[in-house]
Image (cartoon, rainbow, N blue to C red; front, side, top):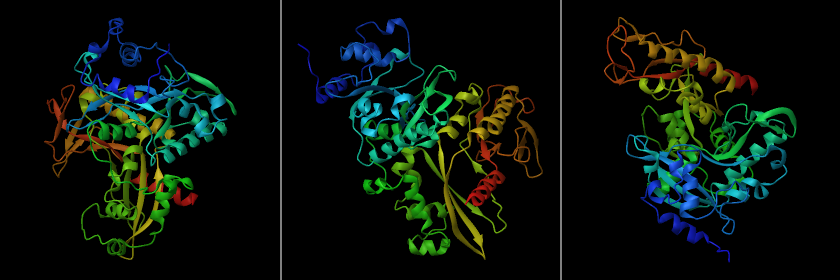
Length: 461
């Protein structure tokens, strides 16, 4: 007689191995065959849940309508945890998926309930010694579901428009169509275009997974939400809602906004504070939706001439890490592929600073794969050669061989440490200084490029 396993039973079975390593669980000697793709899921399927490995379009546990997913967690330098990667789900069949509504889709039928088992990724350990941290039955929160549905529809609309080959993680917030295959040659036919499209799968973005990790593995409280009522998203997208709220205050001065929202501050980030109040949260950067969707806010202040004083910095890179990356798997490329920015423009006019515009922006693929790629390659090569330091100027500032804003159109590299003694180790000796460390550096978007982005937007408006 076939045994029917209930959802409650599945969770109990999964939780029974919390704190155990995969070698503790593996009673089928699966690990002895070496690490292969999906090895951890295979161990749990065979040794813990006692069912055969399969690639069915139905959920792993058909009776309970639950899909098993095993996903890695990494420990950050500050002791917190985050998801190591996106959670890849099922392959998207371009030829058929466009025919279905959300609740009839392959995504929903296979993934409407997920048994998530988290393990700690520790690269210094043997993979068979990785430990299960926790397991949960994940069913989508009522606040997330409208956004996930909208993401699904965005993906399907791309397919219907004959643009499956243009699908990108930047199109959506939580659920994305991620590349799935051994290489760029893993392509499929699409129904409304003769252009073959890269094979893709539904996936939850790493930012979305990180918030699940922090809630269920670390026990952190849920962050503030911009969307207080999920029904708001039945008639508009999240992006549209955010922009409509901000645009209600276009033309207001910073002083008027401070008075309106009772903000008494002279902090450097006052403009971001005001945008947060407009959207009904204390800190927009730490709002639930921005963290899950990996959206960053950037407030930009223009002078009366239209110029922008500051370039836009990103986190400092580690010299010893960047030299071991490939461009395709680099942190810089991944950041631009997975991050969306909310640009909020403040403009100085008649001695007052006014809120003048707001829009979402992502790095265009053609710019990323040309100018930004060339900058990254040049930077890596100079680090490998130990050719960083050039000279010290009259103000005591170190000038490098890295490409500066005067030499580039889009982005550049310059120091990003507290001072010259705020350093990272080098992979090889710096030729001129003879040291094995150098002041921290990072990539910056040129202020002239940001100005160009704003001007192009005004032309399209």
